[in-house]
Length: 263
Image (cartoon, rainbow, N blue to C red):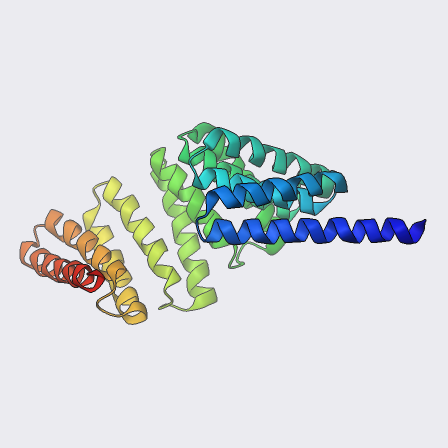
């Protein structure tokens, strides 16, 4: 009898693994119809494992990501909230996996413009992550940046600046001063200064971001063109018209070359 039960359990596990893997692969290649079919089948299997089983929360989270990608925000929010409730009940409110669930739900709420709801979730996610990993851990930086983005939208500029400078410091220490990941944080900090019309503060950040991207990606990369254009806009605000014009010429040349290459 025990052998039969074990065999059935192994069969269920294999079935869940197959559906989950197929759904994940379909999601990654953008085949959303197939992804939904496979992930729903995986969810049916995982529902039989019990609420404490991490495979259930993992499948719900993956299906929520699919719905978010499709713009089905109501369905995605329902699943993210269910994932959070299951993860909290199974692992406790201070577990690092709870922080990830909070972050995912908050990002969706942010996308939907529900800033008042997203804020406390992001703050709680950050607090849990800091407690679990330490205030200077590399994984803290993305949490800081996300919360800073929300604060910027809410015009909490001082709070946003503090978080972004922390994120930049953590990345510099963990990755080095010229790592590509620093460029995004520099851009975010520059955008914060732009929102406050502090163009003199924004300019050197974009200059540094440009140098990092050119070195890491090459001078003809499309992300370099975007940075050139952003930097040019700031220089224009500072009445540095000739410099701005040169950067825009470079950006247009990169975009034109990319268009020709696609043809």
